[in-house]
Image (cartoon, rainbow over all chains, first blue to last red):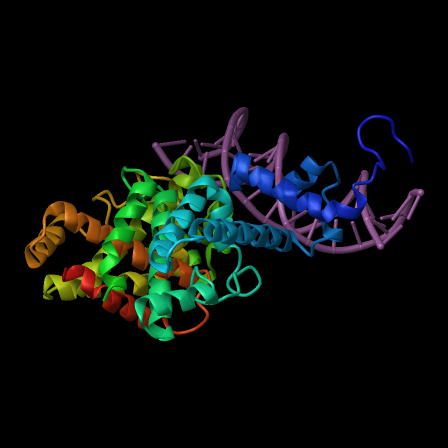
Length: 194
Length: 194
DNA sequence: ACCTGAACACCGTTCAAGT
DNA sequence: ACCTGAACACCGTTCAAGT
């Protein structure tokens, strides 16, 4: 079947799977999580509402894929922010990147963590924002053991995650999120230098 | 009003509003947030699915009321935990009560914070777990100003909230939540004594 | 005043049928 | 192999009609 105007090949074939993920992310960013339904995704791609089931087991499977993209974006953003910084300055940069991501991609951020308990969509590294290499860097800079570094890692993650969530949920009366992030990381100074 | 078998008068009248809230909380605790729908609540109370609209503007309004109950429970639980403790020990007790609440009422806890951005369902006090009196206590014990106490309050809230959320979302590989709570509050020691 | 039943526009999911 | 259309069992919300 050939067609004249709208889309060569006429099939979304090959990468319908990819198109669905992209469309889902677009809906999420532009209209929030309330607008994100399987049928709406299919509609935006121009395909029947049953079509997604040939590429994903169910709604959750598609959204899991979206969540994984989100985690990749977050990780990239944090790595970029911490690059070329000392491990300690890096921690602050990580924090800012984390809450910044939550602020600029609120619906995606929430989906990432809401989406399923443990395993597939998780970051897969360990109990922290930060990967193994960074963790080693912290150990050396702080002169502490891996166990302590892991605790500090969890502390920082919890703080930034909690702050982001409270902010997204409208629980923080006023003040910019970036400002509060700096307040908290500054407050955490003594923990790192103890 | 006396009743013979199931319910005299046949009306749930007077306190249908209350019955709806209670039923919603029961569903939430027993079967999680996925089971919580307006129609299911009405079904459990034994009333038509349109009946709730005579007592709540919409689904959100009913769930807002549930969320407020949750905040009351959380507040009570924290006050009980911190009672008769020094302000500093109180802070640890607050933390334990907070994550403990999240653990024993996971679906309710999530609903409380998911439910709407700011205002009605919020705790209404300020940017923290803790009420004004406790905040004053912290000021005195730490010998710091109100501004600093508020920052510490936000730090603690963010930590405990983030930890709870990450735990509920299955992001923490292993270990009991209570144990991690103690780790983090212990780690925060230097901040309080600085 | 309070509740119901039917109706409407949406969901997610399944499945026979088409190419 | 991949997609569609119809169908099913659910939603939230509205509204005329009942007491």
